[in-house]
Image (tube, rainbow, N blue to C red; front, side, top):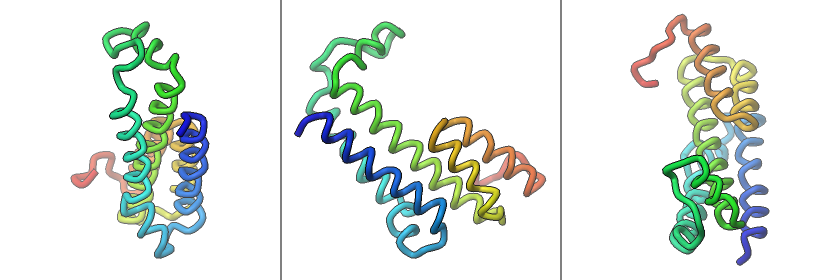
Length: 144
């Protein structure tokens, strides 16, 4: 399989999880597929496969900016990086929805957090923390 195809498949699957989080947050399949962690886990297995098959075969390292830039000069390096991004952002979005529901946040308050997390990762998480603090009157929660 070529990196372009892996990229296209993962890039098509991840948004389906986001659509479920946004438009069907309490649906049984959303809970079974996304909130359970199954979808991020499946994408994580793709990432693991790429790492096992291709890590260390190109130039670059994690010790400097230049080294990291070299890691992303190969198609497999970029694909691994993108899948890594997809996995973790979807996982964070799933957590935001679950945690927001546990803390009594209205879904319409969570949706902007999900959108920002999808597009801008950490910015969505920051917005979630701020909105959750506003809703619960507590910034720090024992269970995150």
